[in-house]
Image (cartoon, rainbow, N blue to C red; front, side, top):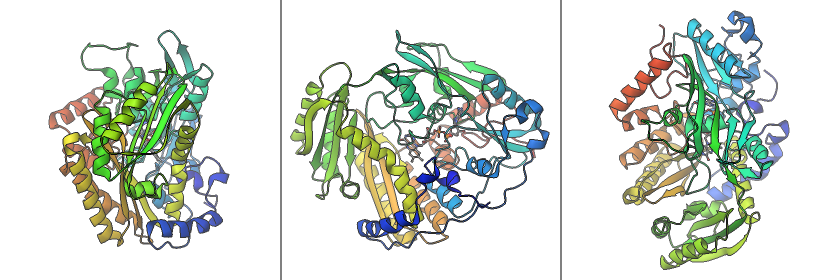
Length: 534
Ligand SMILES: Cc1cc2nc3c(=O)[nH]c(=O)nc-3n(C[C@H](O)[C@H](O)[C@H](O)COP(=O)(O)OP(=O)(O)OC[C@H]3O[C@@H](n4cnc5c(N)ncnc54)[C@H](O)[C@@H]3O)c2cc1C
């Protein structure tokens, strides 16, 4: 393969997004200076290998053949997500698992036909939204014994289908990306107010399948909070819940599909709650002497009952690297927004609690119309994936991981996980940085999010990261956290997910899957073990 491999590992969607040697050469000294590590020149991007032969195209029935692509770049792109493991391997010319073909159905009937054919022919099916999984969720590592594996790309099942202004909810197809969804809602003066950092590329179906979380820190910020009903196609038929504002009728069918990561059904559409676009905003940045002081203030804030849109507590290291605050103190970025009236009351409460906890106002604090600085902050947040791929090209091991725990354990968890990860970086990379911020806060706890940047050893980065990740994951569970707060389980988190969940729940999930996916074709290896042909 001689074409650029950027579509396989890159974040951007056009050739112009691919980092150039000039970009990287300019960035290298800045990175070296900021991180205090040696940075080598840009690494050479290796061509992709010859892919294994396609076992499926020749045997597909004509009706499905028209949906199929066996183009090598397309197959390779659908063989990976966007974790550090994915990016480093494909930059190095490695694609460990690749689907035989990519199928792009255009509606429910075609999804059902694919599932039926695959179930009868022992072909595994990996649902694919935007391919932004950072946990190996779309990698077709489905185990042995399959006659083939297809990547089922939902991109042709997209768009806003229906708006119910009375109930303020919309019906949207699963393959709709974040920008397409918001653009369609804007025509109705509505917003889903759901902005994960992967917004630009991820899809509604992917958000539902992974229980994604947006960048707002409190209130309805998880996709779960927006769901009215979900429609999925399973190998044994459709699964569609009633549109209801709430229901006490037994366990929730939607809750079961949320986070099912393509293992129970292919989500094709959902009704989601939306809201008018915000008109009033307030934001401010405060300085805290250290993270502990910031944590006490944040707990105080959320326990007042006020639900700030932004509540990012960033440790001193990350505050300085990101340019949020360069004083050696921790930064607390707060924001309130509303579409229904002034935000001054909430803002005053937040400012008062910060003052009570000894935090210092650094900037902002004035009420204003929507737009301005918080939009700027959001756009730099959404640019971060582009910076990450440049750091990888400069030889850095760079990745994030996240968790959540109750307030009684937040401080000790952050301390223990930072210590274990720093120790691992020292042993494995000879140095590097671990920083922490809170992405989401609750009245009973918080979600710490860690960023690791360390100098990699050429050719050894994957093994280095795997060892660091294992050390961090062990520390997370030992400290009472969850293996993931919003990145999902995928293939990479399975060992720790299995250790964390109740055994009887695992048995119930296995039974549920067997009932609706008796051939076990849907994303084998995800969430539960399924029997497959030897
Ligand atoms: C730079 C970066 C930033 C990120 N930031 C965030 C963040 O802020 N918040 C967050 O929650 N996550 C984040 N993620 C993780 C990822 O973007 C989310 O998990 C996202 O929800 C995945 O959506 P997707 O459409 O890309 O799904 P994919 O990556 O394509 O798929 C993810 C999983 O869902 C399954 N799946 C996808 N579509 C369907 C469907 N229609 N039906 C059934 N199963 C399906 C797949 O089989 C797979 O198991 C980030 C990832 C990256 C790379």
